[in-house]
Image (cartoon, rainbow, N blue to C red; front, side):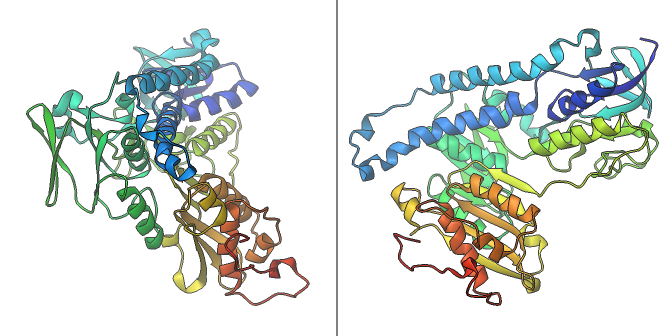
Length: 471
């Protein structure tokens, strides 16, 4: 291929496919190159198979509430873990097929191989040199595994290998209590596996609000042993693995490493771009344009190590793809930050995190779901939600929660923050009865009580009944 292409896309994950969609609108002089299996991280080893496993764990765990509902015989239920994993892979393969279909029709314009950059407009793949006016790097990420742990062989799992297992052992440790670790530890525990979880920090699941962290830690700790604040060390012991963290020492059959993911930029040749790289080997990237310095190069998705979430990767691929087809880059305003952990209760962070706010300039409203009516009716009455508002204007700034239906309330709050709504404006919206969102209204009312009162003719002044069945 001797022609100078308009665009080369490196990586066919969520960001790469989003970039491809935009590039194809403007030119057919492009190629997309992918190293390893085609199909996105989300579809193959991330969001989709993990949620399928979580749903199985949650479905089996519901038996623990059957007695309260008057349903007898819960102790007769059993779980076929190989069947669970077969369903995970069956759905996973279907999800992957839908993403691969996007690139199958490209023929020679879809290339399998490992790329090495030679210059801002040149790269090498499979021994061939390609040139392009613009290059988009969307090489994704891989699980972080400390090098010594590789000696554990098949006793060490990551989310890249977990869903390929035919069955699961009786005893597992989960090391790392970020979003992935929290989700998987609970899901595996609910599948009947003896789980012990370890986190090097006192915080879990991406939370920063100490009160929400305390509730989330307590609730998860009721389901499986949870040890935080000490670095875990692993060593082979007979047919198992010994895990040490401070004074805690356990032996398990295998370990799931959930220490996060790192960008796939090793040996990519980023030094050939001629710009300074930081201590992690990352070049400067404009988050509004995805452009690397002032070069005709863009980095999107997990590869840039900014916000490793699918909707952000899709946005970044769109931005990179659009800018790669224009003489001048467009700077985009990014969406309201939104992160959701699919634990039970859901953990979510929306807008500004607690630790990023000045305590002297904000008001906090909170609600506990222990006595919330709809939550009690569904045996989901646990968790906390904390809202943060500007102390002067009353504008909603952010929220952190470990709450039932948190994934849905988080979206409502993201919309409110994006529209710069105040607490009073939110309280003017209808809250149907009985719904879990009435808990959100309780937290909003707690904020409103700290703000100057508005006119009595304003429906935001309609207060609580102070009756559990009605509020």
